[in-house]
Every structure is written in structure tokens, then in C-alpha cells.
Amino acid sequence: MDETIETALAGYRNYDEYVSSFMDNVPFRGKPLTEWEKEVQLPSVSEHSDVAELRAANASFVNILRIVNSNLAYAKASLKSCEAHYESAMMSAKKSIIEEFEQSGSKRLPSIETLNSMAMERCKVKYIALTIAESFVDYWHIQNEKIRIFDSRLSGLGYLVSLEERYSTRGQ
Image (cartoon, rainbow, N blue to C red; front, side, top):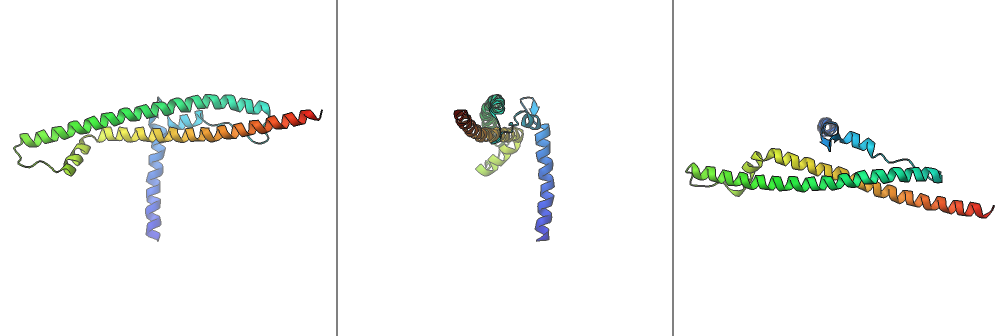
């Protein structure tokens, strides 16, 4: 059991280092994700928020919604572009490998599995770009989910505050 824990802890250090490095150093539209995270931080609202606080939260929410939706759309389009570039590069690499084998006079071509492995090695930079694009889509999708939950909460609180105001003014 101790060996398993040691392995997990060693892996966690690498994980933490990789995640921190990615969040701090890989820019999305000119900013690292740590900056975007601050920019799309949702305002705090509670059942004790008054109408003015809810209006301010809603104004902030609308701006954050615009940023998140815009960046999610951009991330999805970027992912499609990276997928197309990667697929094109893989087809070109496979064609080139086959031509190299034919020019060398080799009687046998590599197996499909070997051909794919060789092509993937030649296209690893494009594959890394594709993986980064997938990470950005995942990041903005999660931000979008947070927005949906916040929107539901904001709507519910707005309704409750509206009811409270309506019934509190009736008695006056």
C-alpha cells in the first residue's frame, strides 16, 4: 500500500506542476487561463441580496456571459481547425512514408499500425496543438456550465426578492 501512495504522490507532483504550468503559461487569446479565471469570476449573491445587489450581479453576469460564450465559440472553432490540420498532416505523413519505402526499394510496406505510429511521430507537434485546443474547449465548456448554474440561481433569487417586495409593500 505504501508503494501505491508513493507512486500517487510522485505523480501528483508532476500533475500539479503540469497543470500550473499550463494555466500560467499557455495563452488563450493572448491571456493565460489564470487571468481569464479572474476575469470570469462570478459575483457573490445570496438569499440576503437586495434588488440593487441583484441588478449589479446581473450586469456583471451579462458581461461574463458574453466573454464565456465568445471564448467557447472561439475554442470550438480553433479545435475544428486543429483537427483539420492534424488530419491533413497525418495523411501527408503517411503518403510520404509510403513513398520513402517505395523509393528505398523495400518489398514490404509497413503495417497499418506501424504506418500510423510513424506518421504520429512526425505529426506530434500538431497533435500537441490539437490536445491543447481540446483542453481550451473543456475549460470554456466548464465555465459555460458555471454560468448556467449561476443564471438559474440569479433568476430564483430575483423571483424571491420580487415576491418579498410585493408582499412587504401590501401591508403598508
